[in-house]
Image 1 (cartoon, rainbow, N blue to C red):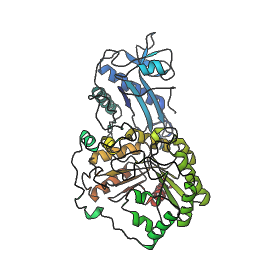
Image 2 (image 1 turned 45 degrees about the vertical axis):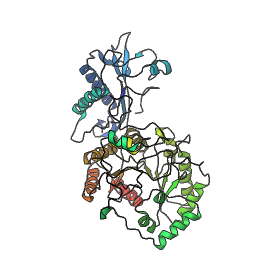
Image 3 (image 1 turned 180 degrees about the horizontal axis):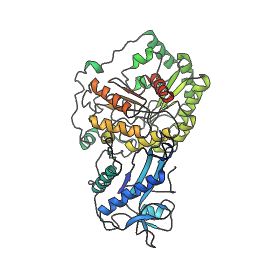
Image 4 (image 1 turned 45 degrees about the horizontal axis):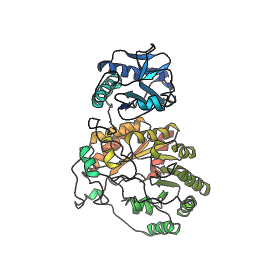
Length: 486
């Protein structure tokens, strides 16, 4: 089911909730989900929450989804919009999107600029306009508690991602103010409750110290890349597995240049103003794949928020060039979130063998770790790839101040939107200008995350101190396909 409505609005003062559930089938154990019952459930959740907040005249209104004040009267007004999407098939009945409850929203946007949800005959309202002056925290707490009672299980969790608009708004682990902003790491870490860190001079434990071996195969790969004037993320990001992967004749190609429009707190990539995309780059990458005799190629990219399509057409062109020159080669694409725009469909249409987008860290640390991205947005990107039938993959780095429970919650969220492959590795601080390492994560904890993810139904979890997003990518894809077709 596609989201309903026509045009809607999300902004400060509005509680947007995305319940992520696996629904029962309408009939028996197979077939489509019972979406009508689910929408009714979401409506009742909000009606019950409003009642606890002192609004007793809320309810449903005929053919219009959502929650209304004084429904079925001439003065009916909508206080909560609902737009859901649910995957089909016995393993894909997971919910996406959700509800938007107007708490203290500036209603000017809805009244003067759009026709909310395409319904022109009725007004919109908010809790504040109905005389209920309540904090966003209090509303979120009530809705969350009632949702837990309605849908809860031992795996239930709540992950807040807030837009810091006023001091009383939830908290500061939200998306940042945009590309080009300097990462105010210390302040954001303090706001997220992660203030302790190890000095960069502290000696690494043996289990996170890579052993570099520059063999003939490594030097051959380096020459191929230099001859074709190509960039690899292996070098640019200081990957600890460079020699191991290059010894196997594999590399992750980074397209669209070596300058990123974002300034993530963990990343070594250059953030100077990027150059125009190189139109000949797809051909050269395809030739490199041929020279290296690869069976599985990984394409990653810098974030290109300066481009209208976020660079998606360039990535798609590169994938097409690889396949044209190298019959049977599998291609994995590790992409940015392209601000959640429809440009994502350009890449989805090319159908990469693995659709990879990294969530990077837990919800609480998002704003400190990657200020121009968002936890919910990343989940949405992955959900869109999975709903298109692609094999989806995501990755995390740990040791930046997260807790074990938060990592488990993130794995639950990833599993809930259908992610099949996950990588988890130790954060290694590139320079003193980057986020500090909060702790060295014990190998046994990585083993725990692998077992936890597999219990959730994920098809392959690569979890170890030196794991990176493209580490053993070919093997991860092969293992996931074995599980799929078993």
